[in-house]
Length: 270
Image (tube, rainbow, N blue to C red; front, side, top):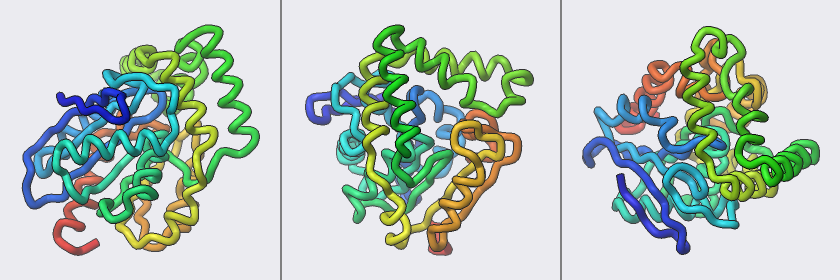
């Protein structure tokens, strides 16, 4: 475990694997979880490369700040990258972590070698989505993090997973419940006002892997697939029977696909 200061906010992170010739991978987590959601995937991938998982501000063991903008979170990730002398890396994120990965690309394009975008969208919030986030902010102010847990956890996994794997559902609920209410509010605000990244992704020439669960209840598979199709050269991985948190529901398939994607880049075949 390591810590770094970013604009006065303490950011916690883990590093697995050894530095070498293989491209490093930096992973940002989903809302309202923490870096622990990447544990199994990171352990599998770190066999062949360095893998860094970051607690975004307001979550896990990182500090809380009123500014939860995706750009600020990207700066936090950048502080970790610099502290670990990572250099150019593959930047990955799931859901909110995907928004942070896109913000990182916008701010530091020369330092991004590849993108792994899972269960996320390039488009900015619609008016309806923004109104939903603002309503959730008011609920969190009234009831604390429990309001966000109750609203989101029942939709983070595939519907079938709640019956077949109640232990996983409990783990997700436990992770979400640890989020600081002020961090939750800051992140919801940041997501509500984030930039549209559609043109950014269409304009860059980078290896990209887009992952979509076919049973995602938050961002429909068809929407993620359409995003991948709009990006020249992007590779789409559809994971059958997985929901929004495909990395937790099918860690083996998720890690295997990311490992193959990065190996091809290492070999110059992307």
